[in-house]
Length: 580
Image (cartoon, rainbow, N blue to C red; front, side, top):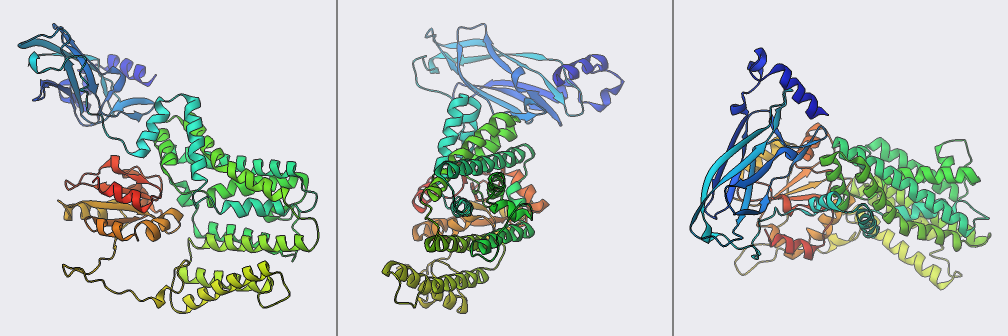
């Protein structure tokens, strides 16, 4: 419709009207060309003037006055512009010729190039067709049976997934994303949801049947899927990292308090009931209130403690952003979320099926889930508090829980006593690590093993992995200009990103990876604050959220096909680096 309106306006105004001074003349707006390159391929296209774009569906290339044919043709990617697929930069097309009749010698032919474009100022030009007489040595052309073809643009994993949505059958797309979701369910980003759904179902108390546990689990997963789909569609349409916006300190503190309230209710300090407050809805035992509470918890869990950005999610967001097709993109995201939620349904049903009968065991189970809820609350605070504070909080929680289990009481069962002792020893290690200034939860006593510089045969000491931290496009441009002729690795990361921490502690810490990374200039785009400058940097490189690893060649240009979204194992990352 927009195209029709602009064509109508162009007829009314005319390119040569009194307003012509506001617009480029056709020969200024479009500069078509065609030639035969050294590979006997046709290179044709249109150089565009300022604020000019071409409609992709109006671009056609054909041959006449010859029996030669176009075997294959490579065009650049079009972009969405107000609902139309267009080319906003100069168009370059490479066409491979075929010689089906086995002609010999120099052959003359004509390339016919058709196109139509518009000005961003509101004028649509008439369609144009240009002819270019060319010649080619037919003996250099490959026959039809040859496997020669146009070199296709190598796509990153994210773009490949986006293309899958574009070209795939809807059912296949949905099943594919369901599979992606099942794989994402195995990542640490989803693990915090397990104690949440278990705790909420356990809090239903007596009379919880397997059927009701299943229904509550389904409600939780559906609410989670709806929330994630809505957030994803909005992010795709508006290019906003909504997950980052939900990492505001006050949001994290508020949600952590919900878990603290749930924990204390499980410890028996009070009983939450509707309609007292929001937390009451989350753990209400009433039939309707239970479902409402579980739905609320599922919705918020997806937004606050949901999975980090991964390739399937980014691919769906790229598809939505490029095509504006929020329906199919949203369906893919919903299918992915359901895949992520299927294991959670199993966990929820299990919590209901194996609920102990009322009595001492029920009190113990409630206490355990209360401790787990406190652990989730502390885990959430990891995103905004100093690691040392988190370490001492976990230590205090563990010491308290070990005393509850009777760590120094000999009349308890051997298994219970052993678990209590393990928790106590680990918690004391955390406490000692806190006093010594350590910050690693996995190696709280690592400070006892002082690092020793390893002297190599060449006399060099082992290098540490150090990133230069930036926050804006200007910062990155300065580094790119300063390091011309060098390979650059750009890491988009944030303090609240779980997978970013995994990359830092597992992948980047690997000795072989460290050695290979020393060949790169290491740059980290810290998008924790998610201010305008961080948003602009992410938008420029099409990053919807961390973690994202991008690579720049020695020419300073980004190698988009090599981009990595999400966590990657050390061995896989090393193999990836070896291809650069």
